Length: 258
Image (cartoon, rainbow, N blue to C red; front, top):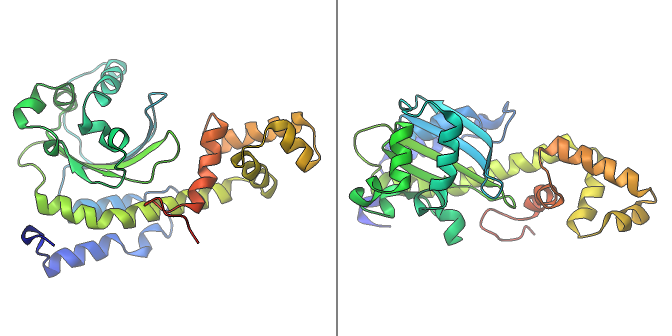
């Protein structure tokens, strides 16, 4: 542990507050607001967000916010979203976990470029339009094409310190495990036993015809089941649906469950 990472009792108490199991007791989504608030208590910020996005299809699926955002300078939200996706792939500030394959590394905008270069970049312009100045990104377990993340934002003032980033790095495995467990539980809750059985066959790579033979049903019945599964899980492809189950058998660090 580096000298900069000297923990005080207050730090340990705040870490424990975030990992309190009571946070998820009554949650109806994978990342309870109380957890986000506890993270913001650990590392002070103006706003903290939990996001699920599909960069391939360029769509946001979930954007959950706690705290007050900065004043957005772009009033045309469609134009802002278009610019967001343009900036997303142009710099590791936004897409580092996807481009580098390092899906467990907490990072800040300032880890990738100087303040001067950042201000001149598309990401810097995006931050300016969104009314924020600094961020730190906590990547969670990916889900096929879906990117899951938590981001902390500061509207002004100082950047996130090395110690704050390291505290979040210590916390990240717990957040990723908690969110993954909630996602897995959600699949079980949303699908019937028959649908879960069918989805397991999809995950094994079987075609609709092969699944129909295995379950002794028609291909039309398989298609209807898949349509219902897609609707319940909020996905649009076999791969994305199968990944919901695949995540139940893999830890966020990529190791298989025993």
